[in-house]
Length: 373
Image (cartoon, rainbow, N blue to C red; front, side, top):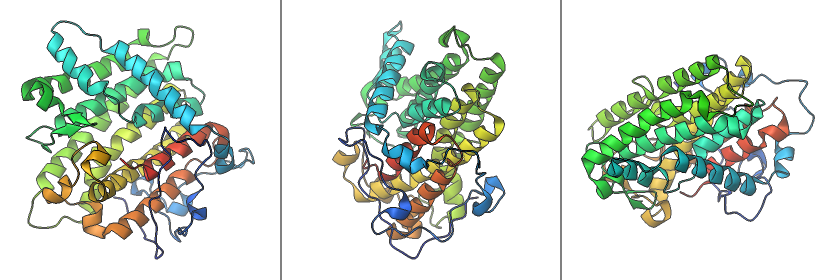
């Protein structure tokens, strides 16, 4: 389980650097933000099996330029817009309209509506960091977005979280009916694995070795199966509306599995496809686990502090359904402090990589922390 040590100073989630931001400069590291004091003890991942102070292996041969300095010269807005556009084009081609039209329309309705494309961009950025390129990463980037969309379709169903809106439009089951929504999710799940495993989807001049494709398929299956995403969803359902409040350990289990693990899969699969060394893949796994839990902590805060129009989905549902969240368990300020700890540790895991190649992942961690929806 994750164990957090909280700061005594106030930590706020500042306005995020969105893809539409006009600046290309980096947000400053946590330790230099106004009103934020670096935590005296960092958040650590129990799965690492080491204290946080030993959790990151620092490469002494890394360039002297710090990751933050390199990031200051990085055009995050351009990077996000370019990668998201490339992902959208690839997804459009991957799910053409075919007979029966209704199921393919439902798949495209949920998949192509937009969204932040955080997971596929993480996949591409991780691949590029270890020496791969966008064309090599794109099939796996599409696969994780298909899985993510499947999880949203199913999560919105009346028998699950029962939400009528997603990404600013009626949820799939509201637009196409529950039976078609279930089948659309099932079809996206199957297509994700087919798309990831098909060698024809990769550039002929830079093919991916079969053993890496098998490893990537296994990683994705592990992350979304009965010990991954499904496990988190089941425990979440069992814990909603119970009279007894659940503890921090169980809450973290839910979100590590329901939310964080798909971000972990995105980063790890990208690193695998890019040919990363085992030690590089594992260091990026720890980065992904930090930003994955950070994503959920921020989600819980936004659900409490933003409106439905701002979020593009129903706000306040966690409170209405009496669901245990980080603000409910820890309070709003402690939840913000936890977010600051997670962001700090995520950045530590990027130390030792080429600072310029790591800039997209640094910015994506900031983006997740400071997003407003």
